[in-house]
Image (cartoon, rainbow, N blue to C red; front, side, top):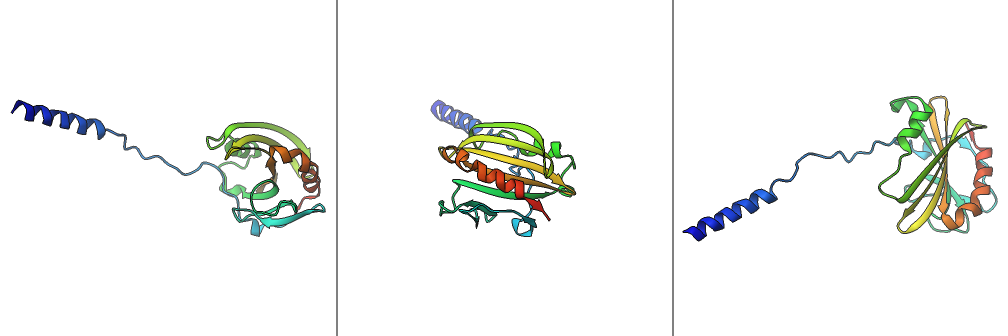
Length: 179
C-alpha cells in the first residue's frame, strides 16, 4: 500500500511539474511597416549597361547585374514605397527608428545611420551588415519622403560584391525620379 501511495505521489508531482508551462500568447505579428506592391509604383530610373530588371524571390521588381542569372541575392537594387497614412506618424525619423532596428534573425547585425540632402530631399542612409545563411551581406538603404509616401531605395550585396557594384547603384539613385 505504501508503494502504491508513493508511486501515485511521484506521478502527481511529475504531472504538476510538466503541466505548469506558461500559457501567455505571444504576438508573432511584426511591428515593421508593410510596403505597397512594387507593381503599383511609378518612377523612372536609368539602368546601367549590364544590368536588368527581374522579380526577386519575394516577387518584387528589382534590378541586378546581368552576370548573376538566378533569382537569389548576390547584388541587387530594390525600391519600396510605404503609404504614410498607414503609419503611426508622418515623421521620416519615426519611420526610420521603427523599421531599422537590430534583428534577431541576423547574426552580427550592425546598423549605421546618417543623414544627407539628395535630389529626393532629406534622406536617411542606413548601412547594415549581417550574416544570413552563413553569408555576410552589406545593405545600403536610402530612405526619403515625397508627399504622403516614404520610399526606400535599397542596394544590397554579399560582402565580396558590395563595393564592385556600389558605383552603379549610386548612379541609379541619382537618376531616380518619382512620378
